[in-house]
Length: 205
Image (cartoon, rainbow, N blue to C red; front, side, top):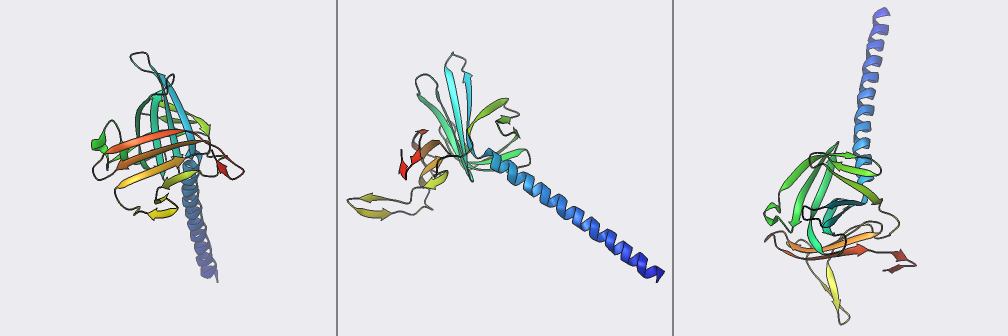
C-alpha cells in the first residue's frame, strides 16, 4: 500500500512537470504571436541625410508581408523601397526580400536582425534605427497584402496567374498603402506609389 502511494505521488509529480512544460511552451508561442500582432500597422522614421535632405521612411506590416519606402519629407520625391515576406521569432526579425530598388542583387535572399518592439516603437538594434507607430492596422477595412489577379477591360474580366514571377502587389495598413510592381525572377523593379486611404460607407478613397 505504501509503495502504491509513492508511485501515485511520483506519477502526480511527473504530470505536474509535463503540465508546467506545456504551459511554458504555450506562453512562448503566445508571446511570439502577440509580438507579431503588435507589429501589424504603419510605422514612421524621420532623419536628415548627409547633404541635409529631410527623409521620411514609412514601413507597413501586413500579415506575412511588409514594405519600406523612403522619400523626401519636403518634396515627397521617391527615393527607395524594399520589401517581401517577414516573420518574427522572439526578438529576431527575418525578411525574405522580393524587391529592392537600391540592391536588386538581394532579391531572393533572407536577412535577419535584432529588434525591440513595444506598442509604440520598433527599434532595429544593430542599425540604430527607430520607427514610431502611425497606426495599428485600423480603421481601414482593406488591411493586408493583396496580389493583383486580374483586370477588367471593356467589361470583360481577364485573370492572370498569381504564381508567376511578375507581380503587382498592394500592401495596406489601416490608413496607409503602397503598391509595387516587380519581378522576382529577373529582380527587376517596375514602379511604386503610395499614400493614405480611407474606407467609408463601402467606398475606397
